[in-house]
Length: 461
Image 1: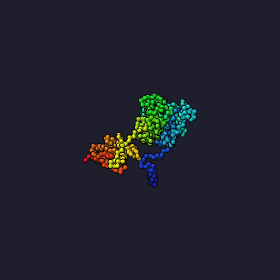
Image 2: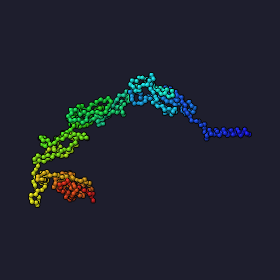
Image 3: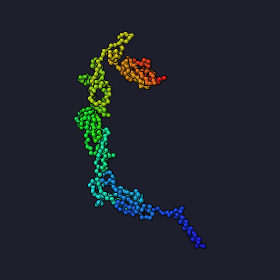
Image 4: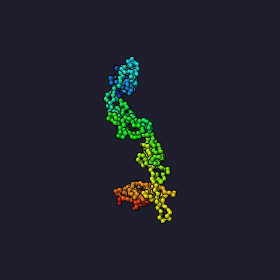
């Protein structure tokens, strides 16, 4: 009986120990597996074989191979390594290594290090080697030249730029996006009469295209391949044709400076002034016409300058961009002797400040004991809505602004839009000191001061 209980107790203890080893009726639990590898090499592949039971690797192995080269041309400069490693991530993860392509070394047949990408190594056999734990994989190779590529281009043009697109399918094209450009540029600023031709020039390059022909044209006249000279001050076009592509650039040959000369007589015997006009920061030859401040010939008054280009120039006329030497000749007006009009009710010795002169009404005034041309003043229309208006003298409608001599009658011509009628017409002195409603009369006598006319309209009804 005593032995029976001993056997029973021993059985219970054994079952309790077994229960702790097999929790919740599960399978057998193994301890974590630690790989232990042996390394071997075959050709360009290194194999790591796990020697511990229970390895989870397929076939207990993981491999690392030296991959085929991509760029090993002796005349190529694009790759930092000639070979890659295949299966690198899995190999490093399983073995705990940190191998990279930098661990590949290169040897000549005599086991000396080659000069990678050296033009002298063509035709020589080399080996790429990788050694891991004594196992050495090798991959033999030869340096070769890049496959030959001959460009074949189609050409297009946009303005002054020609684009060449390579359409050849032989070898590898070394052009970015298979394209190259050539841009035609206008000649740089030249100095007047420096004896040089104003040659257009190219920037950019297209392989195999050397110094393409540039032709020149002035208006519709073809000049050929000889560039115009700087002295021939004119606008020109330079152009170039490649295939069906036509590129061109227009430009104006400029002088270093232009001369504006003022003469007081048509015979050009007396020079009043002379100015030299040079290009400003924007490359334009801008200039303002001078006034005349001298003593006019007896019995004459200055009117304007007559330009050699056929234009009448008045003082302070701006020229935005002068393209030629300009000669200006003074144009004079014969002075007329005014007939004074006596004021009514006076003593007969008093003379009005304003006189009538045949053909030039109210254009003279008596100042300082003599007659001088009377000053004209400005009358202009203020902006309006609901209609439009115009100003005029007795000759009728003349525009929105006039220069008028004092005492002249100025007429206002309103024109209401559909759905509007005239409201008021008011004229005011420019300084705002006085305003007058002339809605009914629609005219007023010009004072010796600038005037603004206000015309307003209102909706119908």
